[in-house]
Amino acid sequence: MVIFVARHLFQPIDPGTPRPLRFEFDGAEITARRNDTVLAAVLASRERCGVNEFDGGGRAGFCLMGSCQECTMWDEDGRRLRGCMTEAREGLRLRSRPHCGSD
Ligand code: FES
Image (cartoon, rainbow, N blue to C red; front, top):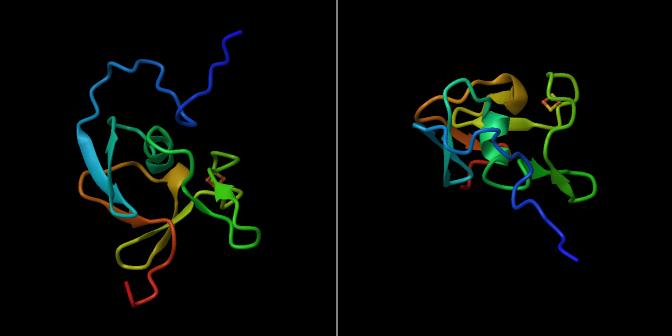
């Protein structure tokens, strides 16, 4: 029996599509296609976009339409954004947790 386990949550429809945009998420480089949301780009390269503050489990978005806040991220200026509603742009610097001043 063969069991297929996806390496990442989001799988591109066309894996050959160029990913020319680069941005940073928790210090790691993420690549994105034009018109990708930040959440789609992050979940194409990892399983989580954050940690649930109540139970420590992973967050990976839920509604994908700006309602649930499960894709909340912070930019380098401390602004909170929804990854599913934010278009990936070259040079973004995002975090899965708010900046606490010591890091
Ligand atoms: S996934 Fe629900 S607000 Fe982004």
